[in-house]
Length: 249
Image (cartoon, rainbow, N blue to C red):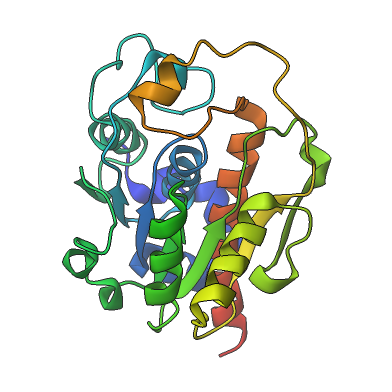
């Protein structure tokens, strides 16, 4: 079995020993391992994150294959977190991957012990659950990063990172901000988001099967290179923060 020293030689060359030690020690929890979250998890583990908790209640569907890392014709029907964990351990068998087949809601929020993590990453779709995660994560000492909408995008050069209140042109961010304002509750601290201000429309016809199956208001088109860049960007924020923490010492 390859050693971690061998696996992460190139990462160590770029980041240095001190940053790599911080990366290896960091505890990360990632909510949602679909089109964005699965690639985020892959990038984190490939860079040297050893302690990763992944949370998702869904199972791999055939329609996931076009954009989700662990979704293949062989994994359809399996729990997403289990399929992804198996993949991640083939990258680094020494990693500690905690796979939770569940969902973050008001009823389950206390089960996740957010205070135990150094980084909390949001890649979930539900507006109400996302708002709750933002609220609770921002009350912790953890660094929190969030993905806005990755559907209906095609141009990779439009993907950006900005503080939540400065995100422009993203309907999901706008809806979240409106909900916070209406509720007169606001995140306790600032946090960065990955987003794109590109606004496309569906060109193909939807048969409605996914909308009904997953209880969605609407099913929107999405594609791998966009969801992957969103996920890689989230992972990049984690690694960049580890490097900055070392430099600031």
